Length: 201
Image (cartoon, rainbow, N blue to C red):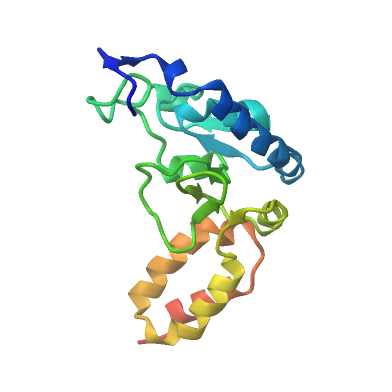
């Protein structure tokens, strides 16, 4: 904000000032060993290239314009009015196909829920959990300042209320929970969902 945009081009050195970059880099150096141990695969917005640079993850998807991914780069342009390099956002389904664990930027992402938001108390805005794998998220808990809903706890609360939900609601929720969690964790509650879904009306 405040930097002039001329024909869709902006002088980014007016935005990403050295002091801010150094502050972000300092935090990311704390994250880096944990991200490496957990083998966290990330997605970033174009403006977050420094996240990939300082974290050095095993996999980083630039998920706004397809700048690092051939499949995204060849998709039809989705937002003609957006600046160049910001017109081919990755869907959540595609990020899951690429086994992305967290998106470090949630702007314009669909599917925000009360359990997939990831916050860090020293950075503004939200991040998004794309895949919740218990072992990886336990590593993330070791970094002070991260806040997110433990999905195992969330499932416990859900199961207490499952009898109040319609079969269709349970079916829809299960499909989302499967894509988000059950496909990546061994959990007996998946069988409980199937029991409710297959029960006679």
